[in-house]
Image 1: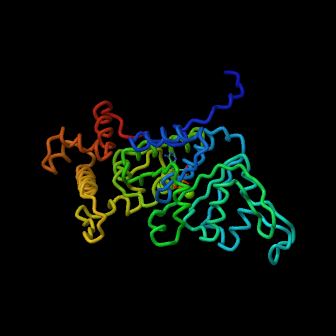
Image 2 (image 1 turned 90 degrees about the vertical axis):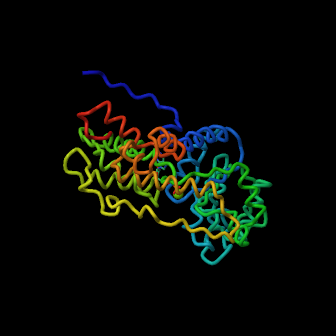
Image 3 (image 1 turned 135 degrees about the vertical axis):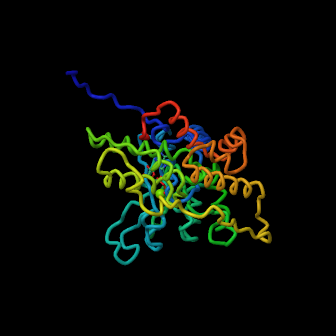
Length: 351
Ligand SMILES: Nc1ncnc2c1ncn2[C@@H]1O[C@H](COP(=O)(O)OP(=O)(O)O)[C@@H](O)[C@H]1O
Ligand SMILES: [Mg+2]
């Protein structure tokens, strides 16, 4: 038996925290590495479950502040009337129930990073106060007549488009521009399907690590089903699904028999129309064409059980043209399924 040595502490790696090989994720990791060492304020936008907090933490961990606190604040989870004292702290007797004085989360994050999640939910009055923190680095606790200085890096996130909130008057325009010195947009999982097998394998690997001796893999058909589904809850939903399937799976291979109905049935019909209102003035024909193309490619692959040749035929395309379109739409998972078929005829499982 080999002697066990204490593992040296592995430095933080953004590849391990933010898994993915899709060009959008590769670019995102590069951007994280660029902004992390700076002091710049970052605004991360993306649907729920796309990895906004993962990105914020990665920026902090790769920054010179990494040994100082990372303080997450979910602006949507704290009642509006409490958010100010939570963030800024308060003096004794500042309001009914304020028995003692208290430090706020901004003070807690001093010299570190504060992560303001769902910042679009922040009341407009508080937005003005936050702007002062960003511009002058000063914090005035509720009920205090003096301000103190803090040194915090602000990373904000929103699952709704703040530009729209600004247009509606629900979000301060000056704060919006001050926050998004570097805007980071994370694509929903359905727009980077090629990462679904990779992420699935990552979550399976974590289960194997957690339960030594446990063998768990996923069948090709089940993988195609995961790949075809739209994942409205994004990576979080996929992560929870993999956990659930691993629990439900009696053997060592996750098969379609244990997939929930909506996953096997494959979300929505191929012909779901794309709603376009020309009067909106916001139509981008190229984007729409690409989306429709992506959907049709996706549906064809689903129908063909992941076989590229057959899917190309369904769309009346040459296989080479089809492959080029796959890459452009970021739909490359079934290619790897095909390839696996080629190089391992006997292996049925995935991962
Ligand atoms: N690219 C990724 N690689 C590995 N795990 C991810 C990735 N993106 C998201 N996750 C995981 O998905 C879950 C949701 O991510 P989170 O950052 O909380 O999303 P959001 O803040 O956008 O709602 C977390 O458990 C996170 O670890
Ligand atoms: Mg979140």
